[in-house]
Image (cartoon, rainbow, N blue to C red; front, top):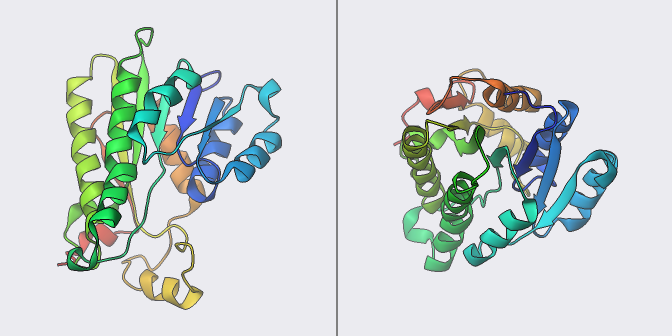
Length: 241
């Protein structure tokens, strides 16, 4: 698929990983639909940085925890050629320590909202060729005792990725990128990040540029679907349970 001129919806595109992915698609000539929720000011700053609406970009706000808002989000987006489900709630809690409300929020943002957006993407009647990329976590490969609903929600999205890739293969390619450490979670001290990187066989964080290149590569591909690409420095090779 040629990316130039394509309309790309990226959830959680205003900050951190999503912002980097958005910039890479803009540099490739795509028209961005910058989704945000609580990061409206950051989204507007990104929009201005990329040339604003006159450059073909726009900002769309929606709370992914409210699944009833998603049809409206897609309606405002119009035709979408590439969907990147990036937004995520990162909860570092074992199952027994997690409240029902916390687990429901993680599943809403990390699984139910991406799944619903995938279905709405598929339902576009005028789409002949499409691409979905789900941003996953290397924890889909094993059971990490420190992560409860977060890991389960990402595993669920990985399974949905494979199911959709098979069922929609005639016109939509669906792939996932399972990440290891890319940047420290909000509030994590540098020393904690250094400790995390010691668990990575390659002893390094995933370069943001490499993640962006992976997104572009999967978007441009004509034949890759149902792929779960691990960008994690080999971290998934260790069983964590």
